[in-house]
Image (cartoon, rainbow, N blue to C red; front, top):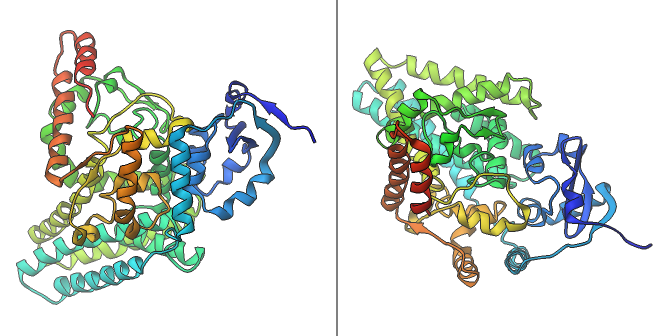
Length: 445
């Protein structure tokens, strides 16, 4: 049969939820109905609607997913389909990793992590219930914060690839490590995290940068951008200006209590009218957390020790919240929808790696290799250090940024970014012209 063709411009017209087409390897697919039940949510597909999404599809789906595409084939091919040299090399690298079996070599990391989480939980219980020393209670609170960090890494890994023997056990691991142990819904995480990966560091599409009125990493937020993720205006008013003016001072204190916001976001999603896959299981998991955690805190002998316990557990876990900010706050940002044609370039532009010794990989959960993770999100964390030199070589070949900083340097870059925006926010007289000039001359990243 003679092939039918449409152009990229014609494909762009099919960019609405009720008329949603995408292209993969030059073949055009109608995913209007599929997006409603897509396991990764509808947001990633909507963000790339009307475009060629080959690289994003390759990054997120195993080879077994390709056979299902024929169910959505429109019969059209993309007339002006082209593949950039960067994409060719990226796809070649992904193929080599697949041929080596790297996507399946998990090296029991999840088993070891879950075992350590279980051991830490038992020690915390013993410290609170069986010890009378305030120092034991302090240590138990600190250990609980570390437990939350490690448990969150399991939730993160299981959201990106299969960490258990089958999908049922994988979902169970997600609920236990996320909802039951940390109080943060895996459904909320998937909703926001998949959008973050697709629209990495887009100010109006990436929810991980939308922290108004508390933080703003760019003066573009001073124009009261509309969040395409939340569907509301991120208003830059007097209150936001005041908070942002001191954000380089408030950053670390806010990180200590950041979990409170995550708990709130979890409840807002689970009890919203949005379609939430596995809503019932997520709510049950959250109820488990809000049963054992308050009971545990209530077993401490007095109010000061209870406050201390909660505070130190939050403070220790704030290291993880800080780490996630370091990976992106000081990287390049942009305004607008993500493009499927520059997948590799956008990931290199919007991420920062944190250098550390290999024995610290467990502490950072592999996510210190942020660029490697963004390029190959299905790759088990134990493989990220191994592929890093290949990613560096590919960035050098195409003159793309590969930025790796020490934990201290990454903090300096982040605070400097926040301070730059804070100083711009303080200009109450004529903010727009000066801010635009400042941004043009001092574009961070």
